[in-house]
Structure formats: structure tokens, C-alpha cells
Image (cartoon, rainbow, N blue to C red):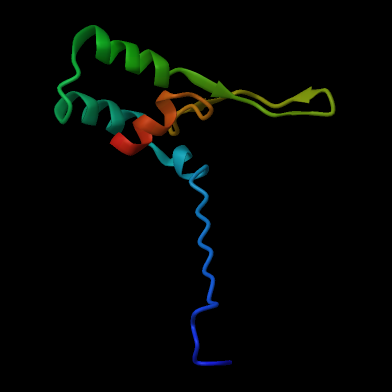
Length: 87
């Protein structure tokens, strides 16, 4: 190794996709209400957007039982990353 660092390259890659799955709906809704003063119909809209979501797995034409999702923000949406940042 030479002491000349002019050719040194550093790569840092972060994958936040699984971090989106850690957002607790109850805490996020409380945070939206208390810290960002979101109330009434707007808070109800966020609640309906986050809550009562279900997940299941399909493999070889067999579907698992549905599970209620109490954590996570929808990925692939504009609101998902924003809600994660606010959380």
C-alpha cells in the first residue's frame, strides 16, 4: 500500500427499504397529532391510510392467512418516505 490516498475510493450504500417496515402506526399518528398539529378529518385520513391493512403471501397458487399490519408505511407511494422522515 502506498501512502498516496489520491486514488482512494469509498462507496457507502444504505438500504432503507426494511426501515420503512418499522414505523409504528400508533406512534406515527400520535406524532402527527401532537408534533405537527394534524387534527380531525386530516388525522382520520392518515389513520385510514395506515390502519386496517393486511398482508398475505402467495406461493404456487396457495395463499397464506392474512395478517394485520400494525407497522410500516406503504412503499412505492409518495407519502411513504415522507411519513418515514416525519417518524
